[in-house]
Length: 552
Image (tube, rainbow, N blue to C red):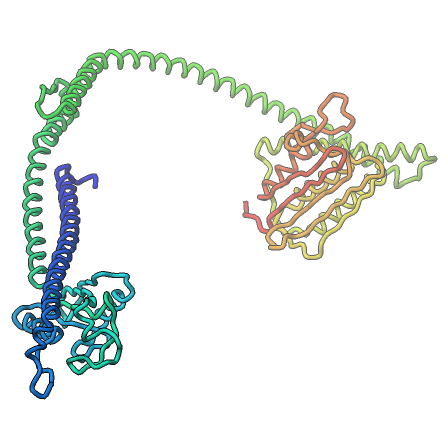
């Protein structure tokens, strides 16, 4: 629709409106013509019925005079009476015109006067007193006709042949019907063809079509000329002006036009716009030069800031490298004497039993704290490797049952020392993994160690390993009844050097690297780790690992 010209749209609109008006006018004219035709035919039927009734009444009023000369010498009645005259006149009228008339009744003396369905309905309505006339347009022998039926009521002159007593033989030799004054003695049925009227209606429709078609042509021509002068020609000038401005000519101006106030207003606004564009263009070079200078100065500032930022980043990288190297060196140097302490403690335990309980507790404390310190040092070393990008996965087939067995051996001694019950459950349908055995063991050991550390005496820690229903993942959950974690801290605990209680006087020791390393290892395998916890209600850490991982 957007590509159709305005003149075409208005032309189509005018055509549609006139066509709708033509159809409505034809329908309205046809309806009025049909109603007028029915009224005229009804009036004509009324006149014909009155004329026939007048003839009938004339014969009835002069019946006595006719009877004086209507008997033979033998006393047989051979004269005229009203019924014979009325029927004869109706037949004569029918033969000399296109109309058809007859007299009908339910129980006529002449079988030719038997009513059809329409006439029977009329007689019933007359006898019931619900109608004084009956008419309709119907089809007879395939042609449309107008049918009119009027009642014939019994008058004083009719009682001699049709009055009481019923069954008595009248002068014509027929038994009387026993009718009373005012009764319906039958009906006059008139049938009038509609050929002439239908032809007139068709001629009227044709005239209307010709008239409206002429009006359509005239209206389209007027609309076309008006649109061309008042709309399209001024719009074409405006379009040419816009194209001229697009080509760079800003001196385009329009003069006053005689088309319409709206077009003059539009052209005035166009002239104002062109003037504004000209002014803007005149000042554009100066503005561009100013903006260029400002941008150049800003670029110089950005260059200096970028250089300063790169210098700061270099210092940060150096400091971070120094920190990592220092931590790696210190951790390595600490591991050597710590390993010796652990080895001598184990050697001491193998070569001789402690002399008393105090010495046994001392040995246990030395061994336990040495292992804890070694674990912290290993965490720091591993984190420095991660920062340096030197940590890679060594994927192999891993049986989590083996991982759980190794972790359980380490955790049982720690759980006995802390007075915490530790249980391990591995479902029989857990699938094998393609993973780094040592890193998965480190994740499980770290989660279990944290659970034991933060669970008070008398608590419980449960390690549970199972496969998903789909068989594509493994779930490792560590559940404890410890101190719990506040909701605001449940995301922070996976950051480096962070614990839920980070105050100086915190009760539980540790570097805060364990959970950060666990998350790093799990995500390296393409898995996830989440925690569910409430303060004082314990915690549940859940690790999801895919069964098959991508090769590094």
